Image 1 (cartoon, rainbow, N blue to C red):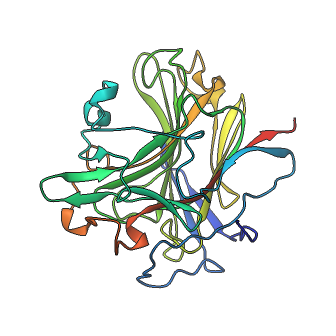
Image 2: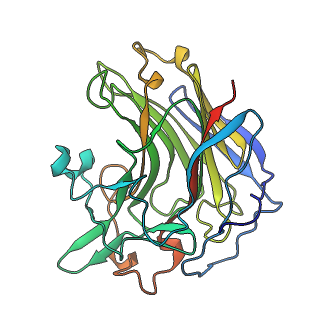
Length: 307
C-alpha cells in the first residue's frame, strides 16, 4: 500500500529561449531538493500516491505495487525492432528488448528497468506499452520517476498514436513526456514530433541546478503533461517548463494530437541520439546493481478534466 503525500519542490526559474525549435530552461533550486554526493541505494522506492488536482478526476493509474507487471495495463516489446519493421528501433540502437527479471521487475512498489551488458550477448533492456489496453487522450498525465546515469543510455517516457491515421511516423504524432541521455541527469528533454511532408519537431531542454537531478531514487521527480485540443503543457514537480500551442506549429494540418495515444516506457542504449555506450559502466545483472543505473517508476496516473 502506498503512503504519504507528494513533496512539492520549490524551484526558481530562469528561462532562456535558444530558438523557435529548441529551447532551454535553467532551474536554480537550493531549497528542499538536496541530493547527497554519490548516493548508493538498491531497489529504493518513494511509495507515494498519485496527487489530487482541482479540476481533474483520476481515471486510471498503475502504482506497480504488485509482484508482477499488470498484464491488463502493459505489454512487452521484444528484440531489436525488426519484428515491428524498425530495425535498430529506427535510431541504430544497440539493445535487445527482453522481459527477463534482470532487466525489468517490480519490487517495493516501483517498476525498475535496468539496461545490462553481458559478454557474448551485448546490451539488453526492456520496453513496455499500453497499446490496446489503455489509451490516453485529453487530460493530465503524471509520472513519478528517476532516471539512470550511464554513458550512451536513453530512457524515455512517451506517447505514440494508437492508430496511424495520418501516416507513418512522425505524421501521426509523438509526445515525449521526458527523455534524458548519457550522464546528463540534470537535463530534461521534452518534445513533440509531427509532420507529413518531412519530420518536424518542437523541443525544449530544461537544465536543472546541481542540486536538482532527475536521478534521485529516494525522492522522485514528477513529470506531467496537461493535454488539450489546443495545446500541451509540460510541468516538472508542478512547475511549467514548456508549452506548445498547436495553432502555432508550421504544417500541423491535419493536427494528429486530437487522436488517442498509448503510453510507452523504455530504456534504450546507444544509437543516433545518445551516442556510443561504455559497456564497463553497465550492470550485468539485477543483483548488486545500484539504483543510479536504473529507470525507476513509482507510478503513472491519468486524469480527465472536469470541464
